[in-house]
Length: 222
Image (cartoon, rainbow, N blue to C red):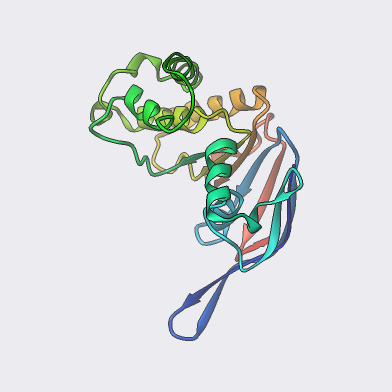
């Protein structure tokens, strides 16, 4: 379970001004829950995901994951947490263009203690889940936007994380590929992953497998 308590994040804006990106956020997210954070750009969704993913630290407050306050983690433990427990799916692909899909997935496990056989098993597993097996040896430069997104999904799952953080995952996709992403989220639900989706896309409205939709505005939960 993820417990967020009295979470605040402030940024300096200009010389003396302070921008309050998050204002006293209190939220509990159950294991295996699919939660959609809705709100326009600048509402604080991405900042909240970044803190849950231990990419960014808050100004104050806590984020407990299974009883551990990840806000207090050193850089080393934050990195270990990200690598082992969290998968990130974003609107920006950040793939190695010179590599194939397989090589991009292999690179995500390059520092792991897994054997080559185990790594290949993982690659087969996640490429099937993300529906990118048919392009496994294709260079990234030859992929469509939807196929690149599937590669990102596969990479997010390669370490078998419990938590999947999706930041505007359909922002650069057409409707057909957005619907394909929705099907992947449904599969993640079946796999009992905890999934948080920050979006303003109406395609996530009224999906029967989404447990909750939470609105954000001006850094606050509505």
